[in-house]
Image (cartoon, rainbow, N blue to C red; front, side, top):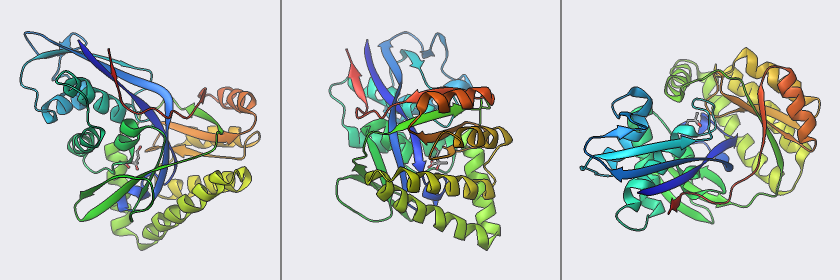
Length: 308
Ligand code: MEV
């Protein structure tokens, strides 16, 4: 039996805009997915046929890893699916890690590249930020140009992303999950249609890119008030892009009275919001009282790890 675990993620700034090549900033979080693989006489995932649509990422990952002998796979995830916390990226990376890990040590650059290709195949359009965060852990800046602490770069359809590690100070983040599962693919497609048809939307995308760079500086300088205000504006712009949800707004409003700022995180359309706060318990209670599933998360420096 070989296994691999990979972390979930939060996008702090820049979701959706990053698909258009704008910068985005994410952090891995201490909620992980684990996948175990062992030889078997047919392909099964958690005892079910691997063709079951709920295992689309797992199936695409074993194919991408070039595995031809059937495996019994077990998938354990602390990340609710469709929650905006990077469940599919973590499961994809952990599956690739479990399959490659059976043949020896894993190469993070190769896993990140293959995981991005899996996400593109299953989701349609995507950026490599989720899969890189699940592979490398820590805080990740996706940017259109090469900067210091470069991990790797990836290209797709004439667009190039440079993925870097960034150091962020410790901060208190509270997640509020709406309980509404929202698959990423259709939301990414919705934003693309809006941007194609509405020149104003292209400016919102660019503004989100600017917010990401300012937000990174504010977080690194521990200027929580500025970072929070930028999160609030990012949330407004994401709503304009059509990826909001009434429950997300409700949770964001509930969180703001005890936090520096709050925004949806990930693809939106449901999923989760995050709040930057120095009163995490109070913020979590506020989110729960407004109907969200609240949890306090911590940054996770560790990326994909082979399990014994
Ligand atoms: C989803 O976590 C982030 C999006 O920007 C999609 C992507 O980057 O692939 C919405």
